[in-house]
Amino acid sequence: MSTSASLTERRGIPAASFVEDVQTYLSQLNLDVNSALAFLQERLQQYRVVEMKLLAQQRDLQAKIPDIEKCLDVVATLQSKKGTGEELIADFEVSEGIYSRACIEEAESVCLWLGANVMLDYSCEEATVLLEKNLENAKASLEVLLADLQFLRDQVTITQVTIARVYNWDVHQRRLRQAVATPSES
Amino acid sequence: MSKAGSSASETEVTWEDQQNINKFGRLNNRLHEVEDEIKIAKETNESLEDAGNELILTDEDTVRFQIGEVFAHVPKEEVESRIEEMTEKTSKNLVKLEEEKESIVAQMAALKKILYGKFKDSINLEED
Image (cartoon, rainbow over all chains, first blue to last red; front, side, top):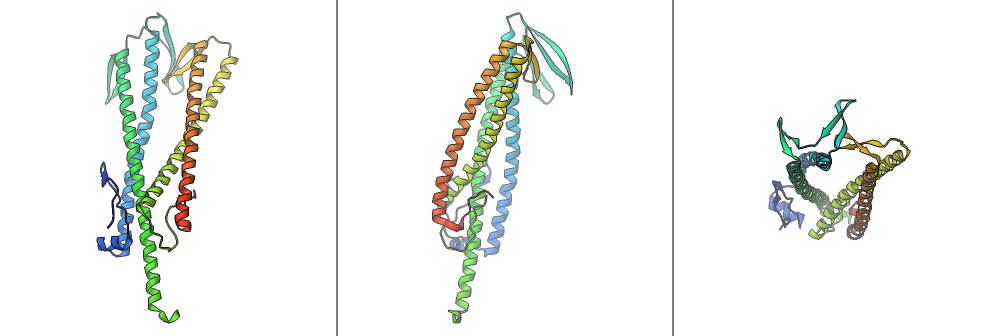
């Protein structure tokens, strides 16, 4: 009887069932060794495909988080200048290698790029709130994603070990059959 | 890193063994991530130190300090304190990462002992 992991699947990723005994496993599936190995290899491939997808999502999120933190930094700086009467002089990139100087006085509001060609005006406080919420969401999504990846990698490991065990069991069976078939050698 | 058995011995793999193998795999992945993060943290520390040194050498009162995507004109003292703050943050992070790395290495050594103890040659837990 093969006992499966505590979860049978996680967010669409099927769990690899742990095999207690290879013989029982094969008779349960009603497959010969080669078909079982083929099935397990295919499962492994499917896991790899999902892993690629998750890794790409992870890279995106890991790039997004520092971007949001930079924005928060800028808004905080603008806010700290407010009320002091000081203006913020900043050099910014107009085009690659070309910089120009901007003089920012009393930043009442900032414009935030929301994506999809939409940019909205926000007060500094509102902008900070929105950006912090986005940062929190991004970090939470990343955590869930990393847990998914861990689960996936565990299933890959279980499948790899199962493949090795089925293969070894087959080799062992062949040796036994050979020993039985040639009793005169003993 | 290969974990597959290679000999035809009949040592049975229990669910506990499988969980140990899984844990070893996860620790190994995390170890590589931590090592990369440590490398980045060390490089950041170096850059901050270079910046600090440059700051001492310059005779300007206003320094162009990068905030977000722009270079803001910031008075020298403020830049000094900002750099100090950043250096402290990175150093603390580095210490935390080194500690995590030590813990992972210790856990992996313990698991290796258990797994090699049971499976001997049937399992390979080395980096190839």
